[in-house]
Image (cartoon, rainbow, N blue to C red; front, side, top):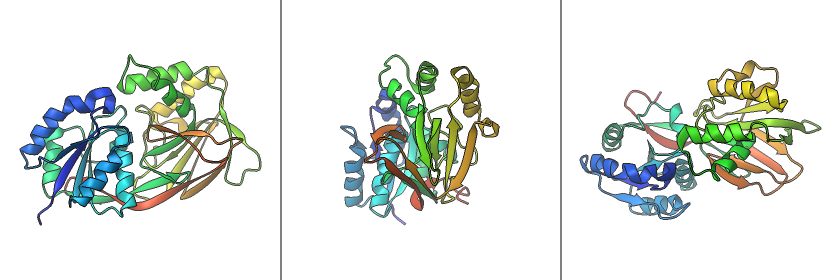
Length: 299
């Protein structure tokens, strides 16, 4: 079967890592006969590039970027019924979603072989928060404050950037009040994450039991604790050992309903957004995305 593949590139992913990797990636893909390279030119341009690739008959779309870039491209594919397969190549800050996959997303030559060869595809879930698609994790509370701080910090990158921002917010953050599902009254939370994948924030193993193909979301709720108790609790979240803590609860479901005092800020795949109302619904979208994986690993 003859396939047509292209490569969408976010040059500013990972604070310029996408641009630095592009010559190496382009060379590796060209060696496999793939020369259709489409750089994004503005934030959100992934949407236009995916539409154009589909219009041009591409049935395999590789995306060089990070969680935000992948999420935007994946969402646009899903909105079109996912007529093309997606391959993910790491160039971002956290690169969290690919930690759930067997594909060698950071190995350029291996990814070029995968895209050009007889890779298998795996059906994976996405989800929506406030009606907007996301790929990996949507979060409220502490991670929103951390993400906002990372956007104001210019002297670090990668996991070190998230770690530094988290440390700065550790004692300043005040928590967030929210009522989950049928709870009659709101509770104050340090962190509230709805996880399709297991990792987020570049450093947190927030939902150790999450699977990207089970049609469910893992809701991880960390009740607010005193400032002195936060470092140990978040350190446990980084290791994935926090679920046994008495201030942490976890629940798996296909949908969740949240109530806030005011439309909240939230983050989805590293992108800050504001909800449109005080009532926010989070919902799994099972099996809507086709992702390339190495042969023999699609089970």
